[in-house]
Image (cartoon, rainbow, N blue to C red; front, side, top):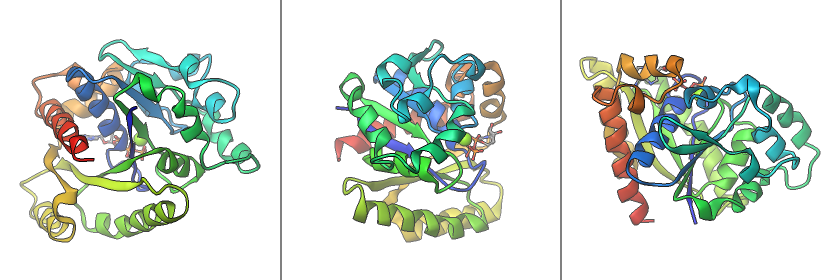
Length: 256
Ligand code: ATP
Ligand code: MG
């Protein structure tokens, strides 16, 4: 059975997709069988894996509304040897359609049960909102990985996410835990970032991942080539950090 992790933060542009894509590629490079679920109508994880979102025959949208099976919809990220359940703008409609459906919060969970034995890791890239889509991600997952930039308002936003996770834990998914907070786009020359990082360690202790992802332009360039940063430039600091993070995740799940 796969371990299922949500990459979530309701704040936009904090590095969720970059983390999801590069962790998928990093874990695949460490011989793990990985499925990346794109749960964002923006389809960034899909495109960043080299899959054209405009050409999809079936996407996660059809899976959620029960018109397709996850198995039939998965595509291969050729550069990095993981599978993708792709998304595009169709998914924006799911949000509305799901409201009237049975088991609307657990439709992703139910769909993934079918493919769970084919993988070691399933990673879910969430949209930047605490929406019904994100709720589906949280209900399907064993744990949440929270990428965050070490900026002042980052801590404020965190309490909303932590509260949502607590509620989901209490009402919908007792398995759910925060696996860890991942410091991303980190620039150690900035005093404020260092201070916020210290505060995080103080408040959250070993819930903060040891690995720090630096700000690195190669990670930002990679998606325009349809490649994870880990495949685009293996020797870059960003790629190395995500490989290290993959190894840290493998260690973490041994303790779960
Ligand atoms: P959204 O909320 O819109 O889904 P997101 O949280 O998924 O955004 P990303 O798309 O991963 O965030 O990243 C936002 C931007 O920052 C992108 O342009 C990405 O290439 C860039 N970026 C992410 N991580 C890094 C990094 N470590 N170094 C430099 N640039 C980065
Ligand atoms: Mg994203």
